[in-house]
Image 1 (cartoon, rainbow, N blue to C red):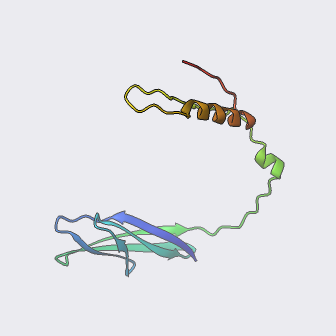
Image 2: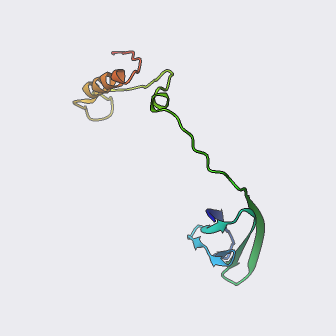
Image 3: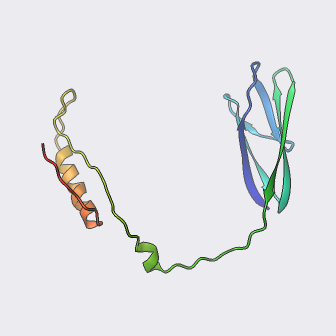
Length: 131
């Protein structure tokens, strides 16, 4: 069987006391968010959510989740192909030592230059602007 987490929100003006999913009490926070794990068999799996307010009024919602039978697939990709990812790499690095309304920094510009050099080693094309 495969585990599936049912999550949702239960709301009521008087307040939600409990939520049950297929008869099992769900975790419920003060905002009405709830969750509980259910185990799915292959095929159709009926799910019933029952919310109970503080006056013991109940609301029920029922739906189904279908689990398909799956075959395990072993994907073999060579290490070279996996790590040979092509494309362009971009990064915007800003180093400002002298802010108008904040305290001055000592190493922000030098730190940004060091990060730029590291990114160049990883194949990033870099462009520098100095003001």
